[in-house]
Amino acid sequence: MRYTLHTIDDRTPLDALDRIWEASQDADDRGFRPRGGWWSLRAWTARAMLLAGSDTPIGGVALNQAPDGAVEARLALLPGHRTPEAAQQLVRAALADVQRSDAALVRLTLPAQATWARDAAAAAGLTVARATLVMLRPATLGSLPAAAAPGLRIRPLAEGEEGRVLHALNHAWAGSWNFRPLTRRALERDLIGQRAGFLLAVDDAGRIAGTIHAQFDQTADNPDGTPYAWLSNLTTAPSWRGRGLGRALLSAGITRLHDRGARSVALGVDSGAVAPITLYRSAGFTEFDRLELWEAQVRGAEVVEMGKLPLLATPAGQTLHT
Image (cartoon, rainbow, N blue to C red; front, side, top):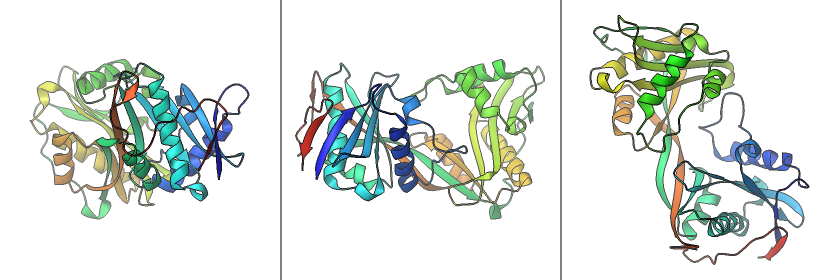
């Protein structure tokens, strides 16, 4: 097979990258499909390359800079073309990009089901540094018992509170791994059609002590095929942690979703977040899927450990025979 890498520019339609991305994700990522369909890879990437097999686009790699300075890469490969050689070309392309930059770290985001990409990453010397878990709780477990948090009441988000909520969310998440401040635009996008499910824990003075967003959509699916019912943005203010507020908010979110007709409740959580995972497991959530972050340190312009694969420079249009 003759493989060719093409840098995407104004002459290369970005639509091809998104089509390959969606087909690749559909095959690999059962747990992380967004409610509205896969997000656009072309809208995320700062630079990208298409992989052609015998002149037909079959894969792609998209790259962007992370807040910590790492180069992040997303890989996509059509299910009918998942040979070890094709996967290796995509990993090599990502590593070659890092070599040409000043980054100290390369990071690949790979679904746990994407063995084609995971095998190529491992062969290139990358290792799993972190993961995001999808956890699922069947509705047959019923409601979640939880004591009320003294001095607080849980209520829906009111009109005009978006600014205060945005501040509370970013304050609660600050210091967490790979923290990226939430923007007003992102919050407003999450609230479209889902405003009533955004719950706040407030004290008598109206101060926000915690949040949770219970999203329900009968037109979309949970990872197990039941109607979409997700919990997100479960946060507690630092001064309220360890006092049962997290469980009270979790209980309120589960109850709301059950009332809407949920047959399972799903959520995502950082694998390194010990306290939240302990809470979720105690509430009956179990791991359903995971998204892994594979990393390798870079020293100057060289990858520290490249395993058995040689690093190939892959400028636009270079042909690679395997």
